[in-house]
Each structure stands twice: as structure tokens, then as C-alpha cells.
Amino acid sequence: MSVKSIIAIAFALSLPFVAASHSAAQAADTVRVGLAAVYPAYSIPYAAKQLGFYKEKDLDVDITLFRGGPATQEALASGAIDVSTIAPAAAALAIAKGVQEKIVAISVPPTPAGWYIMVPVSSPIKTMADLNGKTVGVTQKGSLTDFWVQQAAKKAGITVQSIPLGAAAVMPALKAKQVDAAILWPTFSYKGLVDGDFRSIDDLGATMESSVSEGWAATNELIQKRPAVLHRWLEANAKAIAYMQAHEDWSIKFLKDYFDEKNERVIKMVFDNFIVHINPDGVMKPEWIKTSLELAASSGSKEKLVPEQIFSNEFTPIKVN
Image (cartoon, rainbow, N blue to C red):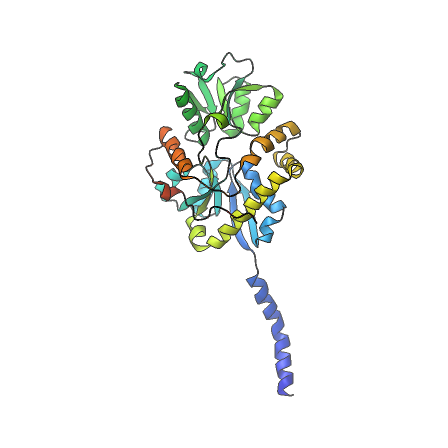
């Protein structure tokens, strides 16, 4: 057999190995995302996945829905997920305890769009001043809902008693008048308004200062060892946000499925009042960060971390491409 023939056979035999190596080199990078609830901002990763934007960025994204923020934070702390949304106060508490994470982009509108302190329509309470000394339903003590209620009470010059009910029980408890008022968020707040069950005594989206109420938190492992992967994941999300904002019909249909909500008026409120107000670039302005930390401090958080320990602006503004 000639040398030329031997080389040809060797090359042919090597092709499967070359193909396998090429395939391995092109394998998508995995990002594990944890979400705490069904909520407008948390629909974005599902939209990015459905629209194929993660695939465009060579990402294999695994999304897990947990039962609330604490469970999501525990998963991030244990390394079971790479990214989650979190309130700065909760991040400060976790980081102070040694959890290796940072908020890398804002994930919601800078004001709490769609968040209301609400009462039953038949309630004699007409204003925040009337709520002085009354009970207000929240998800749990020390949660974002509790922070907002205490801040709203402080702004109104009153005191209220936060009653922790769990996220699923807040709306039913208010409807049953087990509490005098409750804080509700999209879509519960919009549904209560559309159905005529509740009325607002404080629209937090109109009365609260801009802040980073929630952001995408990433593990230090992802930030430091796979920053390019995190960049691509954020870019895919930004593209999904921009797409949703530019394609209302698609977004309404997608959000109806996501929330399992048939009333299009409710979903239209989610789109108009929340989705269109998310900044795709994820930018966290210094004054927003300052306000978010002041909010945490005013609500009883004793963690004295500086912004650089909690937030990173390394990944923003996010490119939309």
C-alpha cells in the first residue's frame, strides 16, 4: 500500500473524531435560572427562550420556578442555579452571611409599576391616613412587600401592622377582609381593579422614588469565570424585552398563556403599565442604588454594606442586538 493511500485512510478514519471535537467545541453554554414566582418581569426568560434568542447566543438555559424568594436565594447560595432575581435588601443580607453573589442588572421598571396598597371596595378606608394603626397583608416579614408597606406608611406619617400571609394568600385574605388592607402586585392588583373587588389607596408606582427594587443576581462564579456567558444571557433578555415592547399582539398572547389569564384587560394592563417600562439596557443609576439601600435601612435592615459589595455595573448597559 502506498504512503498516499495510508494517509488517505488515516484521514478518513479521523473524520468522526474531528466532527465530534467540533461538535463539543460548539456546544451551547448552560445557564441555570431560578425564578421566585409568576410575575411580569419573570416572564422575560421564558419569552427569550420561546423566541429563540438564547439559542442565537449559543446558550442552553434551564429555568426553574421556586416557591418564593427565600427558596430561590437558597438555590443561588448553594450553587444549584447561576442567576436569579432578588431585592437589594435580601441580597445585602445574603452577602453579609457569605453568599457569593452580586446584582448585575435591574430586572423591573425603576418604580414599582402595578404595585398598590389596596382595600375592599366596601371598606371605609379612603386614604393612607385612614390606615393608621390598621393591619396590612404582606407576603412575609422582611420581604419586598413588607419593605414597600413600611416605606409607604412612613411617607404617609402613619404606622401599620404588617401581617405575613404568604404570596398565595394575600389576595384571598383581603377579599375575605381578614386584614384591613394589603399590598398587591401584577397581575393580582390589575385583576382586583378590573374585577371591581378592590380599590387603591396608594399607587406605589406613582408615589415611590426610582430605585432598584429587584435585579438579576448572578453568582460570583458566573461573574468571574464565565463573564462572556453572562453578557450573552443578559443580551438575549434585552432583545426579548425590546421585542415584546415592539410587538404588542405577540406579547399579549404570550402573557395570557404565561399568566393563564383569560381576561385581556388584565393582560393589557400588564403590558401597558409594566412591560413597556422595563429598561432593556438593565442600567442601575447610582441614585437608584442609593435609594434602594436607604429603603432597606428604613425598613429595619441592619446590614451596612456599600453598593460595590451588592451591585456591579460591569455588565450594563446591555446591548440589544
